[in-house]
Every structure is written in C-alpha cells, then in structure tokens.
Image 1 (spheres, rainbow, N blue to C red):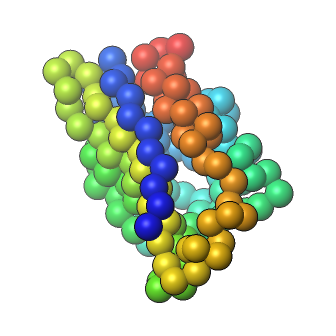
Image 2: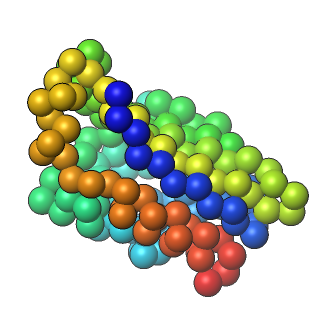
Length: 138
C-alpha cells in the first residue's frame, strides 16, 4: 500500500469548502491542478479526470461516497490487481474546516506499477493550497 496526502486548515465553514469540492467546473477553473473533470460528483457516478500531474492520461473514477458536507471518495482501477482510492474529508475545526485529502494505492500489481506512476505529492499540495485560497475568498 502506498499513500499520498495533504492537510490544510481552512478559514471557512465545511459547507463553503464542500460547495467547491462538489462542483467540477469550480475545481477545474480554480487553479487546483486539474485540466478537466467530466461528470457530476454524486454517488455511483463515473468521472473522467485529467490532471496537470499526468496530462497525457485520463483517469476514470467512480464516486463511492458522497456524504455532504463531510466526505467524498473516488476510486479507480481493478480490485485486487491495482486500484486507487482518493478521499476528501472535511471536519469542523472551530469556525473553520480541517481538510484532508488522501490517495491510497494498493493491489497485487502495485510493486510493478509503482515505478511508472507520477509523483502525485506536488499535485496534492497544489490542490490543498488552491482549495484553501478559493474557500477563504481568494
């Protein structure tokens, strides 16, 4: 199992952050490192994502969880073989929000595939910084 993650304290209520996280158009236009995100972010829906980290690749994702305004989970890949699960978690922290995004990669082929995957950490940092900026009115 391999994990990428980012955390940010955001000076905005979870509902404000959720409005950004659940809107594909805002995510793409907001400088969060996404080139395109097609599909509606809703339970069971398929999404097609292209990121600046791997612009030559389209990731097909399934929305596995959508618990407003607390948690979204996207997943891709084949169970047991290789898959990635990305979770977005919002927790009330005083008058603001503690944001946590994590991608867990696992599967029997992980040792073989890992070396060919791009380093997603810079993209995670960009996403976290951009989300904080947007939610705080920047």
